[in-house]
Length: 123
Image (cartoon, rainbow, N blue to C red; front, side, top):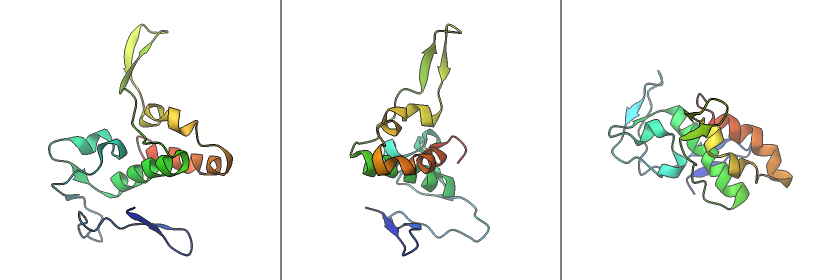
């Protein structure tokens, strides 16, 4: 409910309750309100989260999962056991949400590449 679409279907972030003016040099800003954890990348959940355009991009990926699957995109575990190596390994943010990406079917499947791009560890 904090995203509007323009007539060209461009997404616009509208959460003005936590918005801060971004300088034209794209420096990151700080806020005391971290947002909705399941829609945020792990680095945004620290004691002093730093907001910037990449956080909004990541959160937009979570919103796309929610809208297209009608499910809350609760991320999976950050580490998983790899039977090939016998070790626990950190998984990517896309892998943590793969269950929801797999549910993007029909017309929503067209949005899957965009959602994956938004949820990528380096959007």
